Image (cartoon, rainbow, N blue to C red; front, side, top):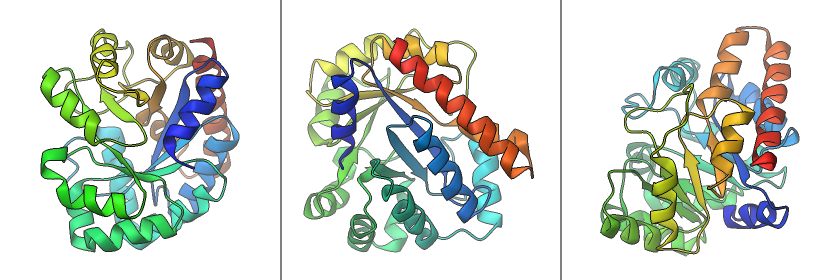
Amino acid sequence: MSAKRAFELARSESRAALVGYLPAGFPDVDGSIEAMKVMVESGCDVIEIGLPYSDPVMDGPTIQAAAQQALEGGVRTRDVLRTVEAVAATGVPTLVMTYWNPVERYGVEKFAADLASAGGAGLITPDITPDFGEEWIAAADRHDLDKVFLVSPSSTDERIAMTTAASRGFVYATAVMGVTGARSTTSDLAGPLVARTKSTTDLPVGVGLGVSTGDQAAEVASYADGVIVGSAFVRTLLDAGPDRQAGLTALATLTRDLADGVRRG
């Protein structure tokens, strides 16, 4: 199922979609699969699987710590694809979020083919823009994969229009300037960015800005089609340490709170 379909199903229930992120291989490959399945069972409509990378310049300390743990555990791109296959089997759209370098190293066409055969819905590419992503756009089109590009408050109207025209699935509005991470307050830049983005496209717009509570999710859901949560999920597992069961229980509780929030929004 494409990500757009998940957003449409959420809209048919008069709510925003909940998009959850975890890196593959954290705390290990099987542990990350188990955690993502708990997130699906507890209310996530779309799952983003992070491909751990050694130079995560756009990630905050929480996601960096989890990705480092995954890399030290020996996670490889093939493990990410195995994770995609397991999570996509739940029926929830499953996308990979990755820096561009690992895709280029793997081979763009091969990555697209293997992602599609694993049941992946598409790719979120935070560090390439459509004007530098011709090779990926062509490969994604050949394999019917979602192409999710990012817009930000600093994007000009022309850049937003160019980005949404090249996107498929949904558009990722990152409403916090700087690195990722959970925040105690949501950004006042997000609403205007969503409005500017929606003026250029019929695609759903998901917002990532450090949401960590159901109340914050409700606030973002009042103007966005989707609420994207990453660091809060990662932090929950990091805080549980080696106690896997405690981590999964806390993850389920957090997901249900966020899922309730997108319904209230």
